[in-house]
Amino acid sequence: MIKAILVDDEPLALEVLETYIQQIPNITLVAKCENAFQANEALKNNNIDLMFLDIQMPQLSGIDFLKTLANPPAVIFTTAYPDYAVEGFELNAVDYLLKPISLERFLKAVNKVSEKIQAKKSDHEDVAPEEQEDYIFVKADKKFVKVHFDDILYIEGLKDYVIIRHETGRIITLQTMKSLEERLPENKFRRIHRSYIVNIRKMSAIVGNMVELMEGGKLKQLPVGKNYKDELLDLVNDNKL
Image (cartoon, rainbow, N blue to C red; front, side, top):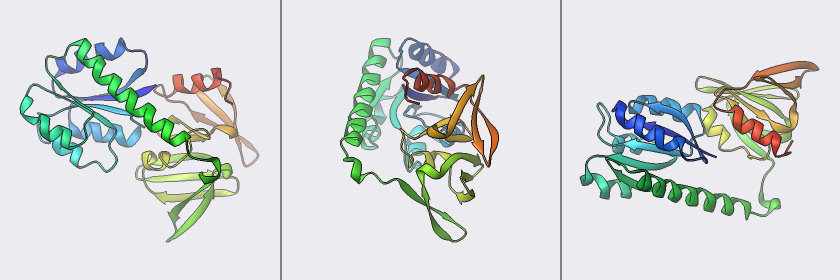
């Protein structure tokens, strides 16, 4: 499932693109943003695969906003002005849609993104198991601490910090949830809320909108956000737990 956000200061443009997304089964809309600042928050708090980005926006243009991102998702520019096409592609945009955007042209652009994501996934799967590390280093208390994936219970986000809860305590490190999530193997961890990432193997149950696990010999419940519940249930239905 491709997780997407829309960024456009025109309400009608957002409405049209949202209608198109609703007709494509492999895309889920995570957020609609009216400016670059809202989009920045959405990217920080979610693992976004695709951003539909308008170019002409007040305060900060789509092109200037994209230049500020260290690890941007796939980008499809949407604009009424063809003059920016060259600069858009120089920023590695997947496609460039001119308004008014037809459903056919929209679908063609989305298919390009799907192919790009699938190719990236195939490259990742081709890595030999012995080359995939089972740990990461995080900076905490003025040193780099080695954290084994199997020791992690869950990860909690707190503004610009994350708290890694493990079997014997916790580690607090200065970074965003999104940056840490990108370093974690997808087959072991799942984001269930804007503030929580859980070790799949430590989950004991899903009850309503809560995930249950054991922490320090006691039952711990973590909330499941509405934008993450469908993907979590897909994981259960696929018998991957």
